[in-house]
Length: 422
Image (cartoon, rainbow, N blue to C red; front, top):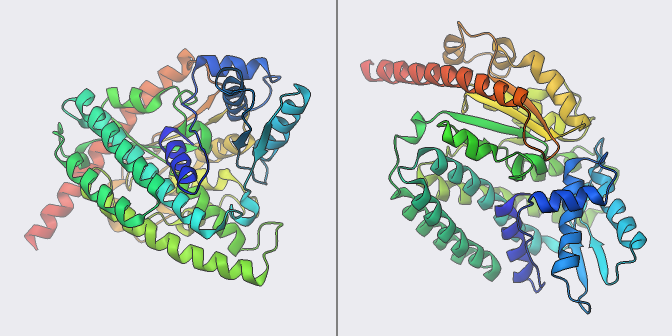
């Protein structure tokens, strides 16, 4: 889930009485340990989460400790649903004592610990999603990047402390203070003038620094900020699946009532938190609309084919040329949903594909008049450094994305001038 989301969720667990520890981000040692205990035919997230668990057992866990490893699970055409099963078998085969797996499932929208925990975890998801994008903008646009990231990290520690306290009013106050301090960071240019790239694809790989080979930092050095598709997107999608009856689990009437109430509060907190952090001026404040994302992908993928493919396709088409000037879809090597997304986006990331999402938008049509293919790059990661071919494709992608960004700036400037003249 990435460093920020993991730390926020661990703080929420501590706030309700668990002795929760957030594992640090994966590194080469973790990757090697994971590979040593798998066949290496498994997808990258399983290899890294396996390595993380074993590293903690070997180096941190005391003999009399009872360790419960929190591992989400789900259904659909993805190996994600087998992670828990694999790790339970690994613990059994290696005869590791006092270790168990604890999972919540997407089948019931990750219920199981009650609405109080769910809503507090939701605060962590929303805040960490937005703060990740703020961090990316600072990497690309701060005058003094080192000082800006130092300030960011200090503020993040204060936010994590509020997650642990579990009081929304305290969290809200801290977010206002953080926003004010971030606004004071000197920038090279206005945030809207910074070319921005969407990073979509498999949820673990797109948010884990090693898995994506520090792509956010690499793009920042080229002057690009990265908007990483949020974890909230998946959470809202699981709610959508429950609403549409596209899961095997059938809720009771009481569970459905609880589910409905939870969704109302989630929408309220999402809007409130994002509006506060949008005060930093570093992100756009438009709300995440999961139904719009799915509708934009539905001409190419059936909603009955559940999983991340429809989100990857829908998010790419929604964001390109509207909020971002390029899309990178990244996933584990051999990931079926990611390859399906790549095959589709390679064909539809063009002028016609984008206009189909908003056929009545005359400004968009005018901007894309002389543009055919839109900047798109698909990457598969196995945790190793990107090969030269991917590096070369990334260079070409950045050139095309910058041209689209300039076109978007020109269009906005003309539209503003037209409004002033009226």
